[in-house]
Image (cartoon, rainbow, N blue to C red; front, side, top):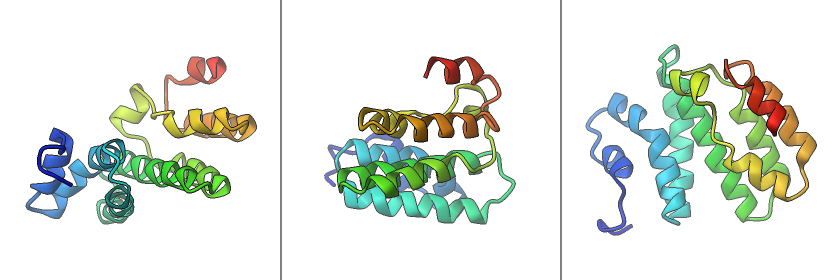
Length: 145
């Protein structure tokens, strides 16, 4: 990935000098790599997000890291045409603790939207109900979806 195409979020990940700094940057970096089209790197970072989450159990950012890691892995699975693996990643993404961001703003619905577009509405509805466990104000959005 060229230096020019790096995002600010990705730079925080690259410049992390400790596992803790990497942990706080990993969720945004996984999405940044995916959005920049650096899919192999996005996959590596998504796996690292899940790994780092296990090292910081109980930290407020664990939910963000797990949700981002699994969501990016699901998006990558869809790109490869593996819808079932994407659905599995979708549901795994919702099985995590809350975070300030997930509890208020809520989770990104990028993977969910792509699956709905493929006709996987019931799977997405199940995800939305799972998300209510950590998305405290998400009930109205579940109804909209």
